[in-house]
Length: 177
View 1 (tube, rainbow, N blue to C red):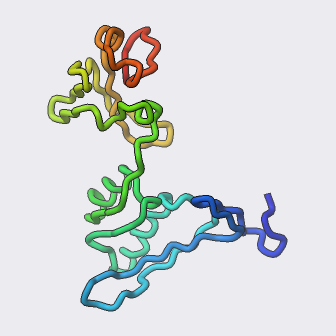
View 2: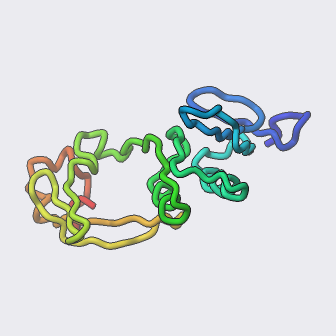
View 3: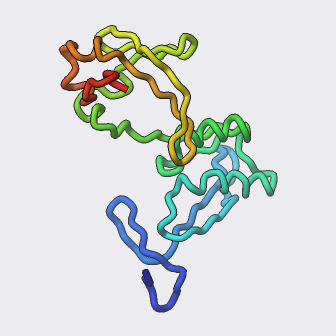
């Protein structure tokens, strides 16, 4: 849809309730306490581009000029779990910023993912009621993001007194996933 008769590439953007027609600019700057703060990178995008979609490109731009940071401090828009891992493993950059809240329906009801104990070595999870997961598998979302899928037994979830605040699983094969 055409947003501006003067600039065909300008698009309507919306962030935190504020809307505009145009672009987004992503600035990087140094922040050493004993040095001047200097802008080291400017990256401009269409207003519809989500901030987290440019984090890797910003790292590539900085690396191309030998300016990659050891720690990259960003706001919440530039952080995902995948980006944190990718920056650390592939670029030796500690991506530091607030990670988004768990927005799954169960988190809003009271028993979000943080209520479970995860044992990565044994590949098991334990629920707040003490039940241990019955399956663990590494999968990928349709967009390619790797995820770990954990299932609990319906025999544990079915009679559990916490069920109403934990899962809406229909109970055919598994309890909470």
